[in-house]
Length: 278
Image (cartoon, rainbow, N blue to C red; front, top):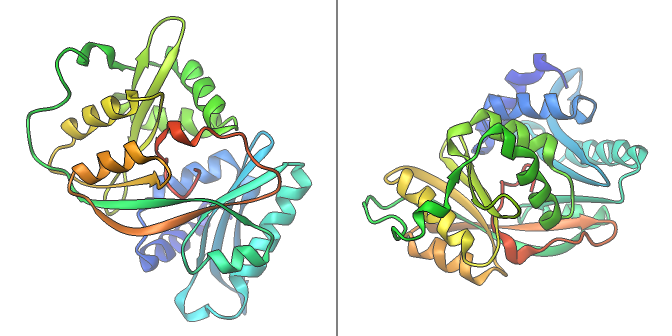
C-alpha cells in the first residue's frame, strides 16, 4: 500500500461503516509502511489490511474487502500474506480484534480467543457535574516530556511497546492527553481519537479507580458529543462506568491471538484504543 491507495482505503472504510479517517490510514503507513497491503482482483485493488509490529508482538487490522468481491477468498489470502510478513519479522505473537463474522475465519488461521470487548456507542450526557473537585488536581495535561513515561506505563500493562503508535496519537491530539501520578510513578493516562462517525474514547490505561477518574474527566470535556468506547467485558468497573453514561452496546469484538500468551493486565484497560491497534 502507498498513499496512492488512500482513496481505496477510505472507500472501503466508508462502505463498511467503520470509524477511521484518512489520518488513521496515513498513521498506519507512517508506522509500518512495509506492513500495509492491498489485494487486487483482475488488476483492480479491492482489499486492504494492516500489520504493525510492536517489538515481539504484532497487531493485524483493517481487513476490508470490497462488497462486490467478497466470498472469493481474497480477504483470507491477504491475511495469509500479512501473517507471512509478520513471521519474517520474528514476532512471537499476533493479535487482532475480530467481528463475529471474522472470528471463525481467524480461528481457521490459528487464532485463539483471549477475551471479548463490548463496543458502546451514543451521545454523552450533557451535564456540568464532572469528577469531584477533590480529585480534579490529580489529573494533569501531559506534555511531550511525559510521553516516554506514559509509553513505558502502557507497555508494562499491555505487554508490548506501542510507543511508535502512542507518540503519534499523543502528538495529533496534544490537548486531549491526560495522566495521573507524580514524578516517580504514573498511575494512568487517557486520550481520544477523532473518527469519521464518532469520537473514540481511549485508550485509557490506569490502575484501580484512576481509570474512572480519567474517563469522568473526558466525559465532562466532551459532553453532548457522539462517542464510541471499547471495553473488555471482563472489566466490571469499566463496564459499569460505560453503562452509567447511557451508551448502547452495539456489538462485541473478539480479541484473538496467534502464538504464546501476551502478559497483559486486562484489569487496567479501561478503554481500548480501538480494533486497529489494541
